[in-house]
Image 1 (tube, rainbow, N blue to C red):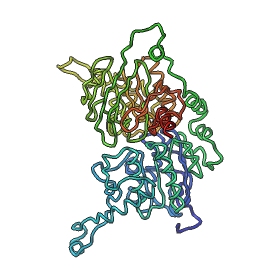
Image 2 (image 1 turned 90 degrees about the horizontal axis):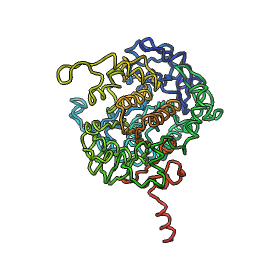
Image 3 (image 1 turned 120 degrees about the vertical axis):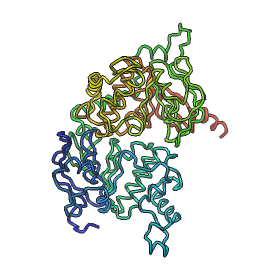
Image 4 (image 1 turned 30 degrees about the vertical axis):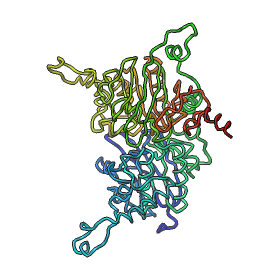
Length: 559
């Protein structure tokens, strides 16, 4: 309970922040009461992440001159200069990017730095350093935290072997286990979850709120914000646009306030095109060839009996074909193999089987071989695989092309070469403008950008390679409505103008249906079926559940 019953649990007054001369927050004021769930929404770059960094005392704030305004807990002024101070005050934070230790179990991650120790005379004399862990008690505490979330995850499971959705639940379980947690900030907690997992999490959050824990919920899934939150706080360009009851706004109004007058047009473009195929002549000719054509066209990509050894992903026996110029989707439930397929093809994890590009065999387990065959890859792990966080944007965008294609270099090959800084900046500036990457310029470090803008940099890096085949995993993960539309439109345009074959892996079925010609559904490590994107959503759902029309007919006959 609050010490001052008349004061809100959290109150922000006129919060402002500036980075390197760039104003990112201006005059932000709102409050949160105990047991209340607040939705905090806005486009990437609107200031949400910076606000969370201030609230949680992240070092990046103090190291860049601090912030303006004041923050109060229970009516008393606080000024956190480290996350430990925020934790001591009962504030928990689950960041968009995971902060788990891969080699540790779920239990060890949940109770990290709060381990249960076995007391002894030795520890009494020589301190806790000589104590042993009470693993049974730790297991029970971790089990309780996981059970609160309503998921079935073994406390003994190693984090590196978990699908990405499980990792998100472990992050949240760690904050729930803290006995003094009163206020919980969740940054895009459902971005990596399947629809079923997201429903489980939302139910758990409602339960936590009923126990008195306040929650600030950040999400680009506006339907979830509407379902979960009592109030919606909308930021745009670093300013608070509205603080309003959730039941007074519909998702279209929220989107409009987030991105301005263009939002309705963007949302309609995204929602009204689920059955429209890409209008590329080569695609239409390949997918719907005239009857008089008898010559069989070699597919751009042919995968036969692919298996991939990727932790948390099951890829047992995958076979499919993708035609030249097609936008091909791969969907399915978390952990069933959809992410393992592109990672295995690109050689990032051990793989076997056969993969052919335009009829020629691709050497597996060698990423450079795939890149040398004019393939490009955008990983689902943009921070771990996709970006050089401490390097500037021009370096990030051009580095792979420089390394594999010898571009953006001056001098004589194999004798003396140096970077062409002018060409690098020019190329980076072109994609910064084309993808509306919010930054101070090509020299800004990638690690300083918001998650959505980092994703755009990964796309730019792939486009610079001018690939024949582009594999993209979770292209709009953690991206707001306006940026999502821009990214999908960019993929359509790139496909149409260059005839590039694009393979998109996504947890969002409607996203795949909106942009792809055909969509393959992966179930338990195999392709359950491939359907035209215009097929009814129910048919895709049946494939995800391991149910096909043939299964239904057989079940009806046996019945």
